[in-house]
Each structure stands twice: as C-alpha cells, then as structure tokens.
Length: 331
Image (cartoon, rainbow, N blue to C red; front, side):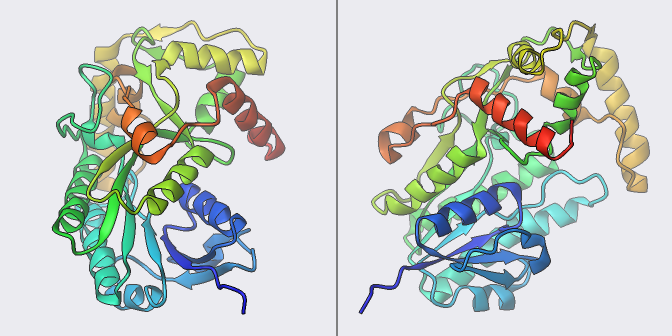
C-alpha cells in the first residue's frame, strides 16, 4: 500500500504568503487544507492535493473541524493594516485568533504549529541590525496585536503543550505583491519622491523564499519555542532600492526629497480626520514611516538552525516583480 502523505492546515491560505505556501506544499506532494473565510478567495489554488476549507480564526467550531487529521498547522492568517477597522478587530484576529488556533490544535492532538509573526513587533530599529533578542518596540495597533499574538504562541510552545516556533518575516515582496505596486508605478511615471534623505534601511524577503522557510521550520521538529527572523541576504538604503527599480524600468532615478516633519504632521492630520469616518487616508503615518525608519535584521540564527538561505537576490527579484506587473497590466 502506498504511503499517504500527511495533511497540513494553512490558515490565511488566500493571502499573498498563505497562497504561496499552499502551492509549495502541494508541489512537494503534501496534502493541504487551505483555510479561508470564503473559499472563492482561493482563486487558482486548484491542485488535486489542495482541499479548500471555509473558516475564520475567530470561529472556534470551524477551527475544530479544520484540525481533524492534520499533521501540522501553519498559522498565517492575520488582520493587516485596514483604515476602516476598529482596534478591537485587530485584537479579535491577531490575538484571540492565535489563541483559538493553538487551543484547537492542542485539543485535536496536532503535534506542531508554525506561527507567522512580523519583524514589525520590533518597530523602528534604532541600532541595526536587529536580531531575535532585540526588545519589542511595536509602533501601531497592528504591530502591538501581532506582538501579543506572538507572545501567546511562544508561551504555548515553551510550556510544551504543542511543538512549534515563531517566524518573523521581513518586508515581504515578490510576484503578485500589491503593496509595492504603487512604488513601482510611481517610479515608472517619474512621480516617486523620498521623505527625508532616502538613507533609511529596508530589508525584504521574497515570498517564495519565505514559504521555504516555513516548511523548514515545520521539518525541524527539534526546534521549539524559538523565534526566527527571515529576511534576504542584506538590507539596503531605500534610495538604493528605488534606483534599482528605476534601472530595471529604464527610467531616471528618483531625485525629489521632501522634508520629514511636515509630512509626518500631514499624515497625523489625515488619520485624525479620516480614520473615525472609516475613510482610507490619502497619506498616513505608517506610509511616512516607510521612508523614515530603519528595518535591518541579522538572519544568522535561521541560517544556522534551520538551514535557511534565500535563493533570490534583489536585482533578480525586481526583474521578476516587474515582469509580473507588466503581465497583469499593473504598470
């Protein structure tokens, strides 16, 4: 009789990271239970090994059903920054949702869970590069609730109730990414500008490399209660990244620099007016932070303990993203 491959549950399977992880797991021959709030969100995840699963991390009964017969859980689902969501919604998904997922996994006897956090729990890196021992310094409701969820997961792992580790991805990008689409488009149209000098560090991770790191973390069952930062080979000044994008687009590099303080004040003003009305601000503090805060990380621990090494370099990644954007008529 042929050996049946184990089944893994992926929460947030319709998202940018979750969908790539589902594809890679199925491509390796594993069975995948792909959980999303609406199964139609799963789009092109139609591999025979992929089982669509309707569910919400806020719904414990749905989680109990989803956990049946799985060998491990990848908890990717989270509420990212949404201007029209109250703070309570972040807590329900990013904190209580983590509690629900882990408790359902424990109740079902699932042996291992990999929790997706974010380097955002460290906020602005004052002395780069940061590592897994750097103190928490969250800057907004998303980062604060991700920190709380991470702490819950670590407590469960370190108590021995379930095996698992926490993965903190860097700034995620890759083909299909929508968050950098505006940056690429503005550089292509020669409309991009810096807030400040453009010298703050950014540290990206390709979504394909990140999915590999999640799989490695599941495989290394001897590692429990640990945190791993997953990012590319190096960080770089934002100005260098923008110039690489301009080079790939074959346009002149951005040159306009706007002062930081007035832009921060404008962002605060826009949020103060728009957020209570549940309107997306035209500019907000988080977007200004992209230009003014360092994000640079030491990834040696993941290399040494998980054997992770990124396969993509920045120049190749920019070419891949650009080709994808052009195919989708996004640029």
